[in-house]
Amino acid sequence: MLSLAAFRYRNIQAEYGGPVARIEMGELPVRGRTMTLANAALKPGLAHRLPTSIFSSTADGTGVHLMTSVARHMAVSECLERWAFSALVRSERAAEFGFDVDPTSTGMSAYPGLFGGQARRRAVFEAIERFSLISWWDGRVAGRLFDTDWPGVSAVAIDGPFGGVTVVTFARTQWGGYVYGHAAGESFSAACERSVIELARHEWVMRSWWLGQVAGESRPPANLFERRCVYFATADGHEAFLHHLRRRPIQPPARVEVICDREIEGPWSDYATVWRFALRPPSEGYLRGGESYFFL
Picture (tube, rainbow, N blue to C red):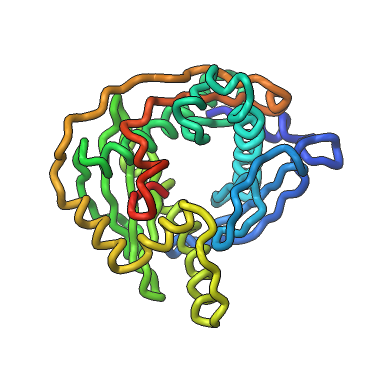
């Protein structure tokens, strides 16, 4: 897709009057490849953050790519999503964008393109990913196990509700725990690559947490997301994951209902189109299912 990021993000940083306070660059090992990791943070007051202990980064947006410029632009785009989400999720306009039904950033995308449809396309795949993942864990659809070309990584493919595929990747780490990633795309290969990048980010953070535990620097999880990451890294958690993989569907497929499909306009629109395409979740397990509910 045509990106105008180099032009539209030229004044994105605070020193030029933009919303991004800082952008930090580094490297991320992704199963034998070295990619650029970019972390970007908004100016204070523009985003809500959960208390964290394991995932202690202060970044509001992250990007990973072989090309440094693309990773940087991806991180900025995630910042703009976070800005729009934080501004609206608790506002009087929340219901206009489906936040009364799904109060998460699921189905949001920011893209500095020429047309709004470019952001919408990305938002659709984000929504498909989360809808499919919940449906699979709830026992409404089947997942198919595949090997991948990525060393040590296996994948579960889940067909989307109206096209596309969601891929959940998983691997055993050198330190003995398990890590995961999930993403959706038009094809298995495209979704798998994105999922493996998420797995690598997950592995990097969990390895740091594990090393802290070994060194006696105990950091208990600070929120539900972190508790799930720790649980599914264990042998018991991974066995629960495999149990769901072996299980056949036990419920009928969830009805697909679009609760939002529109651009979210605001001050972030000076830099990118922010779109939300949201589906009514098949259940509230992703919010209320506890640490043993697979939704990372």
